[in-house]
Image 1 (cartoon, rainbow, N blue to C red):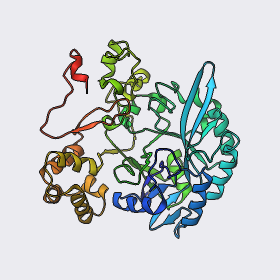
Image 2: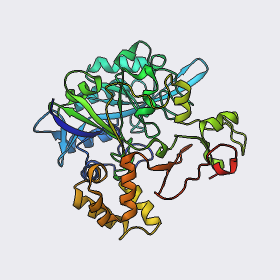
Image 3: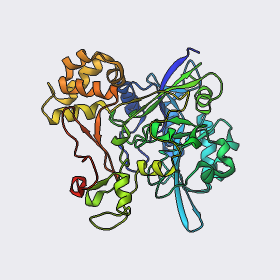
Length: 421
């Protein structure tokens, strides 16, 4: 099938969520999506009554399908909720993304969700309900509503997280796991890490940004490209569910080391450890003795039943990209930009049409002529999959290691001082 390719970021927030930019509104989101090269956005936060009123005032049905539209960018109703529940002595908190086929269906789903929590308190509400009960009740509203475990590996608030999660989707969702068709990989894992679990073979792997700001540094930093017969909600969901001819064409990921929870560590003490070293030290901080935050790589190693490098057949391709603003900031810090970062960024957009086009396929010589040699070199090695990054840990983003510079990571784990930030 040769269909329409939609680059989609279906996990974002609005200005009604905690710790989000006040500019998270439809006009700013549309401007950022155009810069980034994103065709389809989730609305974010449809459960919040104030945001729903704004969505109804801004969005209208598109001309060629049943998705919504504003300013040339498509939208579909989406929210994220925090499912908080107790099993035995442990309280679990799992975030899930919810997609809905219409604003009307979204409002009906919100009415159901309101029985478990106050939806007006936060754009990402906390609901006191078991995952299975939530999924079953939401499916009764409309069978085309899709529930996806969000940032599935992060330590807190995720289905596999070291602090709050489970060892399997079946354990988390019980008999309603049959209605789970995909997981969101999150910033600190990528498809090869997830391929190491045979239990995930039957699920689609999707990537979205979880953006709290409309900056192209955040929006679309991870996304899923859908090849669909038509720009329609059901075709997007069929692709996620692996039904029909619509499909996931590829995903865009940040390198997992860039994510805030890739390695183990303790931010307060500036300690960042590879899981092997963390395990050797009893998973405790060598400075203060408190438990380390065990990162995504650690959890994958605990649950994996396949070796590194395993690739299942027929898996979708992916691109591993660092946001352009990060590359420009890195070059600027080394006085390797020909002009101010914003000037260079705007020139690259004029030249290539969008940030994604510049990073994924832009001619390197043209890129070099605008942004300088260090940026062009970084894009080249990034496309080759060899851009090196100091891994993120315990809420701290990873840091780019410019081509030609050395990493702070030692070749072994003997000298602790090399792990102190």
